[in-house]
Image 1 (cartoon, helix red, strand yellow):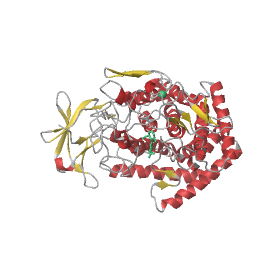
Image 2 (cartoon, protein in one colour):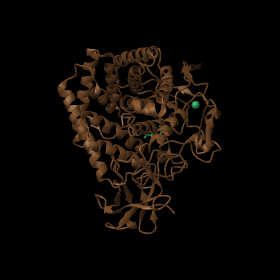
Image 3 (tube, protein in one colour):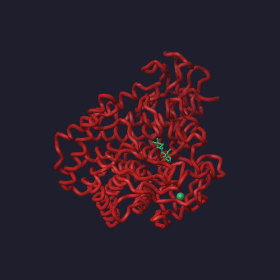
Image 4 (cartoon, helix red, strand yellow):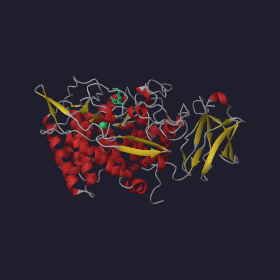
Length: 530
Ligand code: 9MR
Ligand code: ZN
């Protein structure tokens, strides 16, 4: 029977708050619930169900249970939840799996992994990437490698941007814990994508927007796809995104590989110069294609690029340019705030590939370089704190602890995971226990404390998606879908999600969503200082 409990079925760290949600129709406020050991059924805790803040659900707070083990919640005689764990390393396996999922997205090589007794694999694919149309003639140029974008096999620079941005930030914030969990897997993954990105740079510093077939292909394995794939026209958003990624990555790789870091830095500065010669928002001509567009205004991408370049060079000119962009952006959000309450002093509570300004603002705010405007720094510190406070309040009021509240849209599961970046950034400005707790709420929500009472990540937790919109999962002969992938989630409203392969609007997978989840889970890894 389907459970009516909404609970993180991966589990809870021992000292963290633990709250589950029960549908309103199944019990009454004041009714007793119990926490029982899953196998022995021995009751370890008894509490009372309470009405959620808006009275639209029941919540069970069992934070007091902190002994590691495997448990279930029980209300009345029949309502038993799926099992969940309490353990200090409760997300380590999930972290490893979502990061491995990035690796399984690799294009241009064979990939393989075994999970729960099943093996997921494909042969080397898309070795002929890619073609350019030059004066009506087809010219081949090396564009092999990188990650496929999503459930489709195309490769898009702007979406690589927010994905690489989240992974680089994870390394910046949690390198020791990540290293303890998975050694250098994260850096290896970043490098795989960066090596591909470097191939997208044209001689004049402009960057191609994507490498793609003309149309979305059928559900076949990637090595079976023989359709020609093309470099697209260049655009300023992709170029700015490239500048940001390569500049930030050059700092990341400085210690481990100075020559590679230098290569990234040179590539970044070359495209930066191109960007400055083109102050206009140049959208690429994508006429040839009907595949993903990833097109939005380039202002936010430029801001992020300026931030990463300045943090890399420390040059006064770069700082001036960045601070101008930030001031303009902050004034703009102040104006927008009158209509849209989701921006606070420049930071946006929800962000994705189309608005990456938050990434640049964090880099500026967290910089240890001198020369920044104290007033601007203060303005952003206040804005970030308010933004994070807003997320804390929103999650606390939401029956399923969702820090995005009732904001839905394409890929909003990824948006929820990405909000953990804001909470952690606010923690650096002024630590608040509630920031970490709300980050955990986001994770709990995605692993099952949601309207569906189902994990939103393949291969993890209770009743996870079985039919994601993923060409590999659909085409291979393995019963289960490829593991470790976060699906997009409810789109038009809270109930708009179906575990159906055809429902690409709500049940696709994508690098930007998984990379955000990698960050959110990295934030929960046991601290190596503990
Ligand atoms: O994540 C993208 C979402 O914000 C857009 O609304 C949507 C429609 O353009 O496209 C999403 O991105 C898809 C991309 O275009 C192609 N690969 C799969 C992506 C995830 O669905
Ligand atoms: Zn491929």
